[in-house]
Length: 223
Image (cartoon, rainbow, N blue to C red):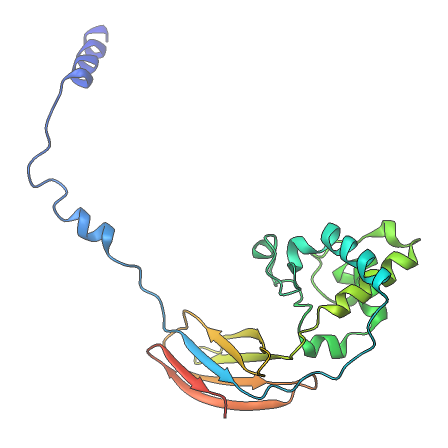
């Protein structure tokens, strides 16, 4: 065993050279770009602007912002787009608080209950934790609800749902800009036929339905 160990040690210390053609084909394989599915972008113009609502008192917004940053921003993100650093670990993704459809259908009481008792209390994701310490602090809860309301997309938002041939589906959201235009980006789509349905306002009105074949990157108008 001692002889074998010495032999291995000497071998490890002995310089050697690789064959001249070693790795000849490895470089091309390593540099080969990854392949992704096509990206389909749908441009939605004239997105309806949500009806205005009374603005909360500045003091309530200030307190609500403080609480939001402490308890909500990790998953819901700075502007309520469900893009916080913790969102990638949650399935299904956190609620997009800026979405006009959700804002129109969620009551203040439901939002407050979700905050205090957690997502499961309102039939949402059980991964949204409860905040039981707020049960005896109605002013803080009210302020946080007011701040959540302030996150609604100012110029409106749209939702696009893509139904694929294999019966799966994917949904994407987009905020409208000041001109009333929004872009829905369906990235890395499975190739094949698909149907896209776009909802454009707080009532879930259908803006367009598009029959597409996902075989290349394309930008389409919502008509």
